[in-house]
Image (tube, rainbow, N blue to C red; front, top):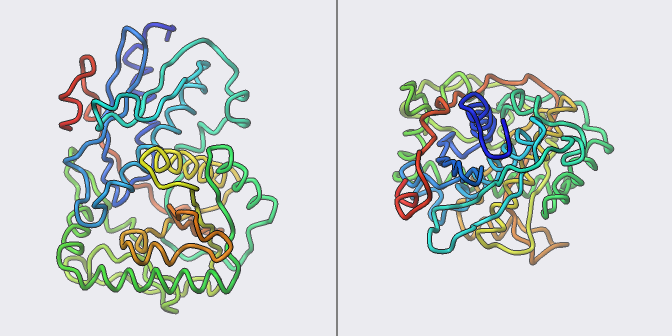
Length: 335
């Protein structure tokens, strides 16, 4: 590819990398638009793939878009180019979440340290038990540094704080079960196999915890899918809490980039991860996630880490389904 032109093969690789990012319920709530004149890739919100009950304000959607943006940055630099990114670049079009102008050749290691491109294809959320093997402090420190470089804080929680956060998460999971609209919305995105509307297949959901100490999301709400098998999960999970100083749309996008950078670095170390989002879907419970040592920070995600099976990949739609053709304009906000 050149500074002013992306061929179809390069474009497909960039989009494939971007959409490998995690999204709540694997909704993949984004669309991409290439401005060929300026070689700028835009990420737009796909409102039709939003979650109006569980993600009423679109915070999770923005975090997903931020994660996709980070993957796009990694892919662009992997192919020897420099991405110049902007968050919320046009206030006239709130659905335009971010842009990445592709310019000048550069060394990918000057942008992201080690090239994280290969990790994009191996990062999967693992909803399976992890071994009782601690993650080394050096690795946890590297993950914290990765998030810090993207403007967010990623901190390990101690045993007592971990237990408290899991209790709050369990309360949120209980509320989700009891809320018909939320449980219906959750079930809608599980076990879908149509190519244009891929969701989370039952094979990727994993077992339930026989200890009942790790509150895993049950997408079936114990109604539409067979009861998942139960296995003993780790009694002392390792958790990290991702937070930002402010809680604006731009902060959500930064948190998404920080999250994905940390997840990719974890993947390079063979560390598996899963995301605990339930408590973030309830305003009062989200407030309870704040640490007493950082009472004014805004928690954006809880990350569980450990060593175990990689877990099956969640399917993604094909790249051409994400791409809009043409220039920017008001219609971009309609997707």
